Amino acid sequence: MKSMQNAKKIIFFLIPFFIFSFFSCKYKQTEKTSVSGKECNIRFSWWGKEDRANYTLQGISDFEKLYPSIHILPEDNSWLEYEANIGDLITSGTCADLMLLNFDWLYKYSKDGNGFYDLNTLSEYIDLYNFTLDDLSYGTQNGKLNAIPIAFNTAIPVFNMNVLEENNLDIPSTWNELFEMARVLKKKDMYLFTLSKRHLFFVALAWFEQTYSKKMFSEDGSLNISEEEISLIYDFVKTLVDENIIYSLNDGFQIPAIREKKVAGAVLWCNETSIFIDEVSALGGRAVLGNFISTPGASESGWYLKPASMYAIKKDCKNPKEAAIFMNYLLNNPDYALLQKNDKGVPISNKSLTALMQSGQLESMQYKALMKIRFNNDSINKMLPVMDDNNMILSFADNAYSYIAGEKSKVDACKAFISSF
Image (cartoon, rainbow, N blue to C red):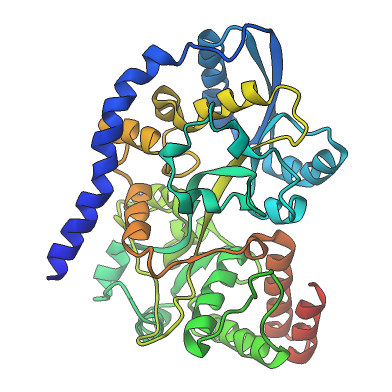
């Protein structure tokens, strides 16, 4: 029965590929039709490293050949520079016409839905049918479609299978199995995970919500737990440290720990799993995806899904139709999908996903992670924007570290975290 259910899921998931592979053949024949012949400039901003800049600039060049009257003015930034300046740019009205967004910025800069252009009004120029209503709900504020997700992300464990096999260990599915695994590795002076402060928060969040059948945040983004409950979470984090589940709490994710075989695995975003894969492969090992750790019988899953990044248009953009045409190209053009590949995660646009599938670009850990999300989508929650807020994450992790390191009492650490809201 279970195999039949899985088969149905696979068939349901693959149907769009066959449908959209037909339409993708027609895409190039119709795309040269422009909204108007007028010359206009569209400023486009994003963050990323050199590889992202290279394929983005190539995509811009290809787009301008399709639409000679639309000129794209690229604005390339590092993540740190982009994050530091985006708030002032948006609030002052000096941001780019089309911009790459982090999920929590919708909450910060468009609580009422008026911070960005309503893309529903541009549906003639954006092929929204490539996305499900649930996909688009992540970018909807107060009934207005402010942004469209490019890909989805969730925190997920990955393991060096060679380390597991050498120690006769299986991939854990429950917290008890996780701690049993850590006890074996601790005897060899090894740790279970290297992970960032952000992913430490999501691991602790999953444990708390499963264990106490209670969500940490209300739907409006406010804290939904007491100081006493926060202290329980901080005690759990201390246990993670004491039992060698976490390598270097204060230093975050550490590639040297993988290279030196100090850890058996990591917790990463789906679209970052290649970092771990590459390091393990360089050691002659084999990386595998883990499971979403759970508490048997729990009423809350504790695991959350969010857009990896999103595209939005400036609220008072002077040429919104042309900006929408370019956004559609970035989201749904098969040729651009082949340039971008999985850099921003496995795309959720059916048309782009089909292009990658047909070209054999999806045989990757990221694709397997996407499938794990799809097959567990009934037990993974929609992330609230506050959960992706960098200040909240740092407050949670830094106060936990201060408590564990003896720099603050547990009471003071909990109070400090609450006061950061």
